[in-house]
Structure formats: C-alpha cells, structure tokens
Length: 83
Image (cartoon, rainbow, N blue to C red; front, top):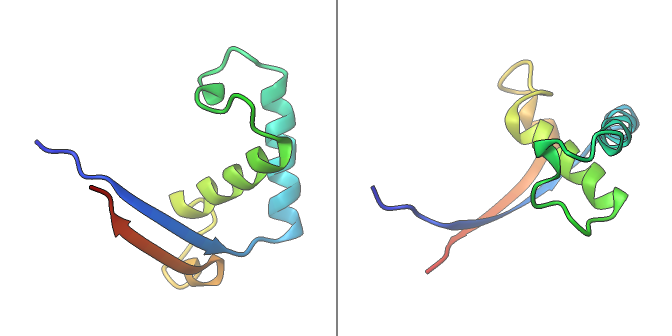
C-alpha cells in the first residue's frame, strides 16, 4: 500500500469555553511530561498547543454532535497533494 501525503489548511472558529477547556487540558499535560501526548510537540508554545488541541477536537468530531454542527467550526479547508 502506497502512502499519500496531503497538506491541508483549516480555518476554524472556537468559543471561549472551547479555548478554556483546551488550555486546562494543556496545563494538565504539563504535569505528565512522559506521556505520548508530548511526542512531536517539543518547543511549541502554550498558545500553539492550545490551538492544536482545539483543532484536534473539532476535526476528530468531539464538538460535532450532528452533521450540521461541523460547519459552524470548520470555515474553510484548502488541500494539495505533496510530491
């Protein structure tokens, strides 16, 4: 099976509640430096980690209770094949 690479850029919106929840999650992860969570996150700022967490939850469907809800958060998506 051949692996394909695609670079995708999302424009998302999030609420203050989602931001605060993600910030609390990142703060909790700081207390557990040996968790798998930290792989590939070396050198990232708290702001980057918080936004990553929000994006992860939106794209994974955690905030999408119904199919129409995703459209509220994902405003735009641009993708291109990488060669």
